[in-house]
Length: 305
Image 1 (tube, helix red, strand yellow):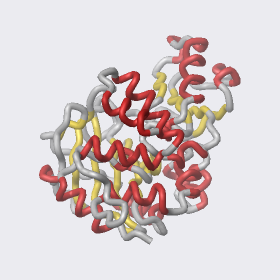
Image 2 (spheres, rainbow, N blue to C red):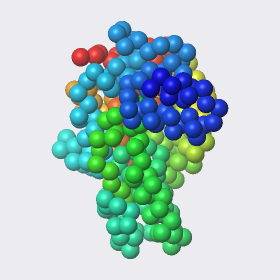
Image 3 (cartoon, one colour):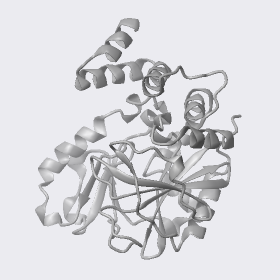
């Protein structure tokens, strides 16, 4: 293992480094978490006295019962949880789900839809016109995503316990939002055992970058809480307070109850809130786009069991 770690850290080739990190993550996810933290923040992860939100997320990954994390990170299974809590009106329409890409009934799908795996991140197929899709190419891509082990890359083993499948859902109209954005505006609400605290807003998302900003519950903008990176760009665009913010905060309160920390990701289209996903390990516990002050604030709000 020591030689693998040394090779991973010393490799000049990203593909080889990524492969080595995934290997470490498969064999010892806690070791990978320690490596990634030291590599990202230049200091060892304090397992015995975690303080900021990154340290506490990593502590929770390996010292907490994460069985519910697995259930609620499953983008298909979580729908039952949302409905059970009386929030089914926030769910987008589900068109279907399949265990294999070859089983997808493309003829049953509408002209516009979103397709993704239930256990990954970023592997989303957005279809605006089904007539322009090549089902064979899509099947190959989706099957590749389906067989990947997302949890190995960032030391998040709870993702690997999800039974993988492919789901197709309603495509929300990103033109019916309070400001122009090339993507849906993502309202990511940080909440702590039933208490929402801050909203991290992400919009104009591409494969290469996304505009971001942090707001408090009174919708005051806090640029001092963000650090601009090549991917996460601190915005200078004022995002209006969502019309449905009170409903969003109520949902975040309900969904986060019983969890030390949770990020509830929501959308608003045509003044109506929609559920996105629940994120227990934001950025895998390596949030490098927040200031240290904000990391400490979030960490102070996270009460470990």
